[in-house]
Image 1 (cartoon, helix red, strand yellow):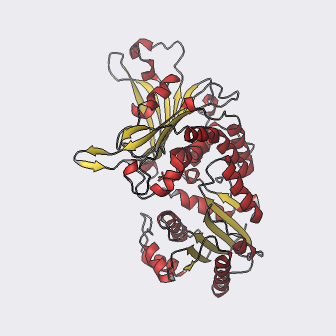
Image 2 (tube, rainbow, N blue to C red):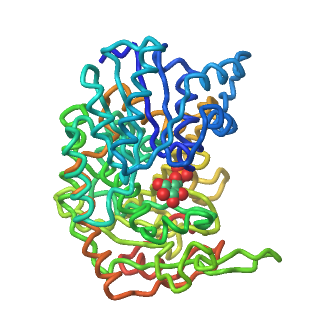
Image 3 (cartoon, rainbow, N blue to C red):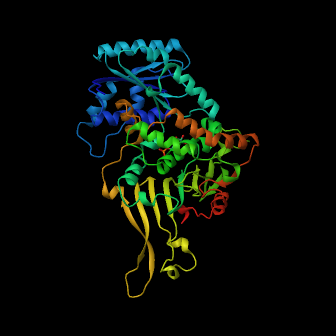
Length: 487
Ligand code: BG6
C-alpha cells in the first residue's frame, strides 16, 4: 500500500514503554529511511507537557546505530521537530477530539496529503479511538494495541467487542513484541527452508520442547501493574505461547498473514487447557547476596505485603494432534532469577540401538541431540551433537555446531518494536495477533488462572537471584524431562 505521508499517534506517550521502546523505534526507522518523507508524530498522555518537554524527554533514549553516520545529531533534531504533544484524559472523548483537531492542523501545515495514513499506538486500556478514527476517513487507519488484552477469556472478549465497535479486525494490530524478535522470526525460515529440520519436527524424533524465559531483575517499579497480572499472564499466555504456536504449527499454505495465523489458531485449539497438576508457581523473596540485599517481591511498596501473585511459573502443555501426541511442551518463566535469558530448547529422542551407547555410561541423556535457539541475549542457534574426541582412543564428546549471530552477522539486530511498527505501517499483519488466536490462547490459561486464584494457591518462595523453585524440577521429572538450561 502506498503511503507517501503518515501521521502517528502514541497514546501513553509519557510512559516507560513509549520512552524506552516506541520513540526509539520510530527514530531508528526514521534514521534508516524507513518512514515516509512527510510524517508527524503526536504524543498523547495525561501528564501536561509542552512539545519541547516531550522532545527533551524522549531525546535521551534515541540512539543511532553502531555504523554511526556523521549526521546523527542532525537526524535527531529533524526527528524531534516532527514530534508534538497533546495532553488529555484517556477516557475523554472530548480530549481525543481536541487531539484530532491538532492532528489535522499539523497534517495541513506539514502538507500531509489527504490520502495519508494514520497509525496509532495504544495500550488496550485506552479505547477512546472513535473520534481519532472518524477523522481519517479519507486515508487508512491502523491501531496498534499493546497488552494486557484483558485478564481472562471474558475480559479479553469484552475488549475485543469494544475495539470492534470502532475498528475492523483488519485495522487492529495486537502486538506481542516477542514475535518481532529476530530469532522468533527465523523459526519459520529454519523449519520451512531447510531440509534437515522439518522431517524431524514431530513426536517421532522430538522428545520434548522447552520454552524458557528468565530475567535477572524483579518487578522494580512495575509492581502496581504486575501484581494484577502475574507471570503467567505477563509472559506465558502471550510471549511463550506465541513462540510455541509458531514452533508447532503445521506448514501454512503460504506466508500470507491469514494462512500463518490460521495454522497458529489450529495448533492452539488442538491443545488441552492447563491443569493445576501440570503447573507450579513461585515468588521471589529477599536475599542477601555477597553483602548486597536484594528485595523480595512483596518488599516492593507498590505490592500488597500478602500478595500471592506468581513471579515464576513452570508448566507442561500438550498438543493433541498426530504430529505432537504425547510430547511435553514445557514452559518456564521467571523474574529475579540468576540470569537474563530467553530460549527454545528442542530435545531429541535417543538414537535407537546406539552403537556407542557404552561410551555414555548409564546416562544416555548426556548423548541427547539438542537444538537450541537462543532468542536473547547473544542470539544464537546451536545444535548439540556427539563427536569423537580426536585421538587414538575412542572417546565421545557432546559438542556444538554453533551459529553465533554476533560472529556471523556483526550488524546490530533491530529492536523487535522497529520491525513491528514498520510492519503495522506497511499493513503487514503476519506478526500480529488475530482475535481468534487471542481467544484460543486465553482458553488454555483461563481455567487454570481461576483455580489458582480461587483457591489462593501459595507460590513456592525462591531467593532473588537463584535458579527458581525446585518444584520446576519435579514437574519436568514427572514427564521424564530435564531442563536443558540447567546443564
Ligand atoms: C513484557 C513484560 O511484555 O516483556 C515484562 O510485561 C518483561 O515484564 C518484558 O520484562 C520482557 O521483554 P524483553 O524484550 O526485554 O525480553
